[in-house]
Length: 135
Image 1 (cartoon, rainbow, N blue to C red):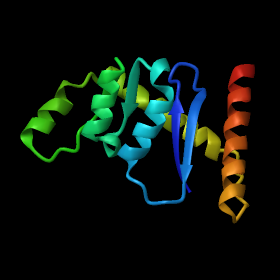
Image 2: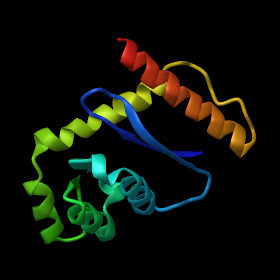
Image 3: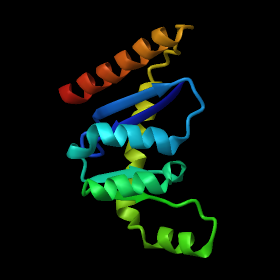
Image 4: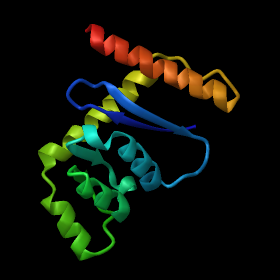
């Protein structure tokens, strides 16, 4: 099960979740999640697995700043990465914190069916958001 989360880096709340069992390209998944939440986002922070020009263009068209490192295939892309503000980009680590919090429960996904796994992960996200709101 491939899980993609849209996390508010200030509150650590999960804003959106995308689950798939297919070997989809991260950029395509990122574009789907972005389009569902475009009006709420000022910046989109993602790692270089989401480096896709269509995602960047969609962000710019919706007045959202894409803070996504490029896959360093040439000197120009290395230069683009050097221009990214590290303080802003490092906020992305907060989404990794949320993943760690979800995995910290010690509970493994027990269901074998796709729908069962989807329901379990959705419940974990809801419980996480409720826990964050209560604290």
